[in-house]
Each structure stands twice: as structure tokens, then as C-alpha cells.
Amino acid sequence: MNCRRKHRQKKKMGFYLMVSLAIFGVLVCRFFYVFWWRPMKLGRFIKDQGINGPPYWPMVGNMMEEARLKNEAKSRPMDLSHAIVPRVIPFLYQTFEYYGRSSMAWFGVNPRVTIMDPELIREVFSNKEGHFEKTTLSPIFKVLVTGLVNHEGDKWVKHRRIINPAFHQEKLKRMFPAFHTSCCELMRKWEESVGSEGESCELDVWHEFQNFTGDVISRTAFGSSYKQGMRIFQLQTEQAQLFSHSVKSVLIPGYRFLPIRVNKRRNEIDKEVCALLRGMIKEREKEMKMGNVSSNDLLGLLMESNFRDSQEQGNSNAAAMTTEEVIDECKLFYFAGQETTSVLLTWTMVILSMHPNWQMKAREEVLQVFGKNKPDFDGLNHLKIVTMILYEVLRLYPPVVYTVRRVAKTAKLGDITLPAGAQVSLPTLLMHHDPEIWGEDVEEFKPERFSDGVAKASKNRTVFFPFNWGPRICIGQNFALIEAKMALAMILQQFSFELSPSYAHAPFAAVTLQPQHGAQIILHRH
Image (cartoon, rainbow, N blue to C red; front, side, top):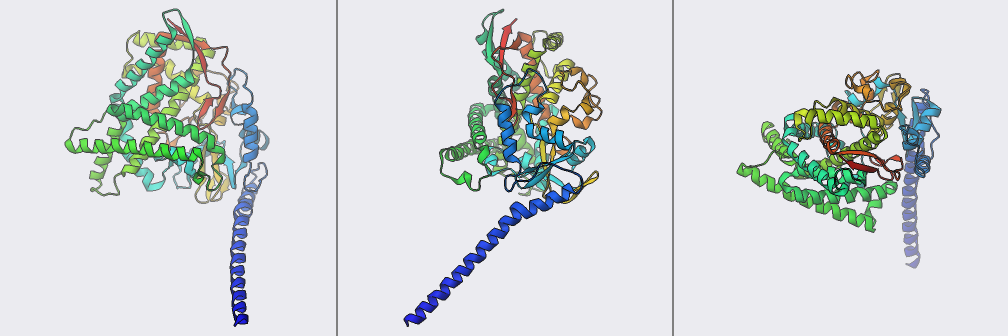
């Protein structure tokens, strides 16, 4: 009996050992396939077409070298100039310089081809055949923002159709009083800081504009629920800070599940933000049923459009956005609406301090159009010099320095074929600073480039894409430009400004192109 029992135990142990070895073998094969065989196959396919780049390092690709160069660039500020490409995207710049206008680098296990041909960039943005999709967001980043920016296919079409009416020109006019209220609050605060006429003070306008644009999006998105909106802004700002601290760890499998302080706080913030938004949405639903819903803010316009779309599509549940989807879009309002405009206004103040002649021209135009009176919606469209200045700032300092698309299925792009699984990088900053497109004075601040509009500013209009291009162009670009024009006009009416001696010119790319050490400006009241 003992012999039989021992024999059975040996057989069982042998079976478990065989299963363990089989699982281990599968894992080894899977590891080898994901981290070596597949990347080498994709890389060889691309290199055979004459597109070269730095060698692949297993698992990390070129990300370690990219991080090293970024940290080295951030270790010291640069000269006071607009030649910011080597500092902001040093790895991409060096790859471009060494391997040419069409080059390849490795983002982890994914080969990423950089495209510098304007026509090919147009083709990728157009995406008529559905070959190029948005890259998948990390789960940590999805807590901060998702929604329209990350959807594909029919879901993107549905959300875009529902959200688009909220950003039409006539709807933006309804939000104009909210823009003005926020601007008045900012001017009142700055007047108190400066004191009486002829006096001056130093402010970090990067911090000021972050709060200002958060105030604007809170008023324009939630109207009567402004206080709750400001609470959401504060929470989303903290969430963004937590994300920036965790960005180096997002590739570690299971990192977001570790019971550490940053993960706990991230989840607490997300729960509170969702609870606040869910409460506001349910309140609006009640108001809609009673027939007295407000449609002068983004939430009201979104829900009105969502309800109308559902009715037009036959009252189908699939036609309307769910409450959770509306929550995601509201979180996106905050992230896109606050971040983009704050960096645009910050760099505009810095650049106009560096070029006082253009500051004077812009002020003269504002005073000619509005005097000291409140700017009006139609008058903002007559600010030609201000518009030229904002476009040139967006050229030199685009909020997003490059855009990435994933190759969903094998695609022909010009003379090259891109395999499914590869990525395409559309380097906005490189294109905006390319002397072949803009001329030898590409690094100079010359708003007159845009005197005849965007289409004639360069040899090919596609190369100016601060808000992306094609079907997925930023839905809120008019919102951002109206907000920026309004704020800049009211600032120019009351203040002149110059760079503080404490200002260190150090643009760097976080989620957006930001001033690493702030933007210290000396305000003069006049």
C-alpha cells in the first residue's frame, strides 16, 4: 500500500512538474516574442525601406536615453531665444539630425517612425482608410482624462456629433459673459497686487493663468454650479500633479494597484470628482424634465444635444451618451480647456515681454478697437494684430509638441509601408521650427507671417497644426482663442509688462509645453 501511495504521489508530482514546465515554457516564449522577436521583425521591416534610427534595447527601447537627455536639458535654463527644440525634445532632435527627416526610434517595444513630409502628415491626420488610430492611454492617465480625445470608430463619431454643437460660434457667444466675469476677477486681483497707477509688482503669470483658466472652465462648463465646478478644478489639478509624479512608473505592470499613498489619493480624487459630476448631471436631468434647463454652459449644451440626438435616433439607448460617458467628457473639458489656454497665455506674456515693440502694437490695436471699454464678442474678431501674435506664439510654443498615432493595419504612406503595430510620430514642434518650411528666420518672432492668414503663412498650411488637423482637430480651439483674446485685450488695456530678472527661460514638455521654473513678469499699471 505504501509503495502504491508513493508511486501515485510521484506521478502527481511529475504531472505538476510537467505542467509547471509547460507554463514556464509558454511564458518564456511569450516574453521572447513580445520583447525580442516581434520588435526585431517590425524594426527590420521598416529599416529595409531605408528608415534608420538608434538600436533597440529589450523592453525599454530608447526610453532610457530619452529620459537621460531630457533630464540633462532640464538641469539648466537656456538663453533667452526661441530656438527651443534641442531643449524641449532633445532625443527627437538628435535622432532627426543624425538619421534624417524620416527616422525611427523605439518607444518601449514599439517602433515609432517620425514623419516630416507635410503631405504625409496630412494623410495621417485625414485617416480616410482608418489605418491610423490614437495610441492607448495608460490606465493611470485615463483616471485624469478620457472621453472624445481617446475614442475611435463609431463611438468617436457619436460623441463628436453630440459635443460639437456646444462649441458652435453662436453657443460660444452665450458663454461670453462668463469669460468676461473671470477676466474682471483676474484684473481686480492684479490691480490690488500692483497698487495705484504708475506702480508695479512681480507675478508668476504661469500660476496666475492656471487659476484663471480653471475659473473660466468652471463658469463656462457648469454655470450656476460654479462653486462645485471650482472644487472639481482643484481636484483635477491635484490629479494632474499626481500623474506627473507617477509618469515614470506607468509602464510598471500593476503599479496602479499597489497600496501606496499616491494611488490611494488618486482613487479618492477620482471618486469625489465623479460623485460631484454625477450629482450635477442628475440635477440637470431633473431640470430638463421640468422644462427649465439652462443651456448657457457646456454641461447644459452637452445634455441638451445628447437628449436631442437620442430622440432623433429613435430614442435608442445606444444613441445617447451614458452618465459615465458625460462624466468623462466633463473631465476632458477641464483638462483640455484649462491646460491649453493657460500655456498659450503664459508664453504670449513672456514673448511680448521679450518683444516690447509687438506689445505696443497690440495695445494700440486694442485701444483703437475698444478704448477702455469692455471688449465685445464681435470686436475680438477685428483684432488682427492680436490674432497674428497668438498664431505666432502657437507656432513657436505649441501646447502639444508632438502627436502619435498607432498603425492599426498595414498602411502605405508615400513611398514607405508601415506594418501594423508600428507607431507614427507627427512632430508639431519640429515642423513649426523647420527652416525648409518657414525660412531661415524660423526661430524669430515674426507675427507678420500670419498677416494674410494661416493658409499663406508658410509653403504648406498643414505644417501649422497647434490644435492638430483633419477630422480630429481640437473641438475647443475657438473656445481657447476667444478666451485668450479676451484676457489679453483686457490685460493690454490696463497693464504693460516686462520680464523679471528672476525669470529663467526653461520651456519643457510635461503633458503640455510649460515653463519649468514659472514665468515671472513685472506688471506696470497705466
